[in-house]
Length: 361
Image (cartoon, rainbow, N blue to C red; front, top):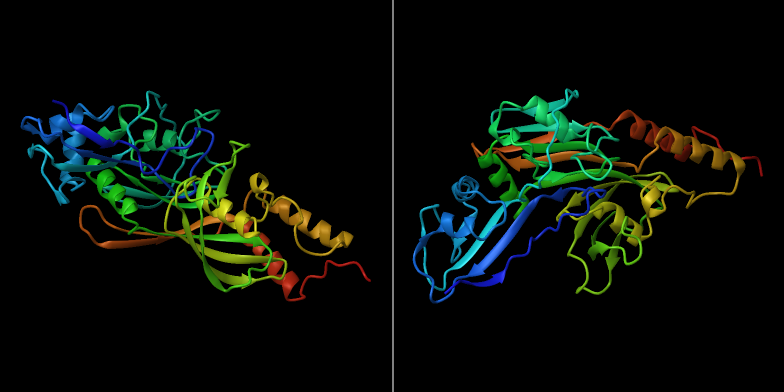
């Protein structure tokens, strides 16, 4: 008899190719309860036949990282599956049948060793190939930079990726260079032990200096290009964003966000739900003047800020994780890019009266 499959659904569903995940995680979680009539078989063989695109080598790498657990305990790849075993598997998302073309695109490397690479992604760069973006992506650049490594030689669309940030969001990103690192980092994202912090400029003046935004996030009922926060917990997927006010400028506010979960457009959707869309976020309504006066010069001031920062005001500021080989805690920070820094400085001068933009009454 075959095993009884209880669940084979990924914890984090991948969005469509034209939607990048804000801090989104790229892994899948599987769970089975083995049937009473199961004959003994090695677990790597058992899983190879049940997980699409999972070779025996990949399954063994998952086991080495401690990401295959039977009855709550990590097991080796030679473990023999027994009737009624409770099996759970966490592994990087399987590859799609898409070939990536290596391209010699400069990378802003913050740190690199034989196990991983930490990068600064510029705003405007797509993380991986997808709908309408087949070249010029971060993965195309990585495929060239790391072309001698086995993980980057088979043309997979997301080699080494355990998370990603939006095309028009700038900031820090970690990429695995080996199967072992890929599986270890996936486990840390799954268990929420990776610390991710963003800086966002939002419309309005949040009432609290710090808070937690909760609410399930899923595809907008009518606009597939947007994500929506649902009141009914049966819709979407749980999402939690912690935030604290860094600086108030009257009509806009600089906040730091810490992601507890990684959902598509999480920060953008959560702050729109709160009533404070991100500054110049065209997808979520932040590209209009939502707070302030009706004076002509104020409108001109805001439009000048929009021109300086032609994207949502969101930057992946820092990332902290345990090194997959040494276990040492590593922390990395990314400075604000010039466009966002200039707009924040303009609002700072305006808020302190150093910049006058109003018409005379």
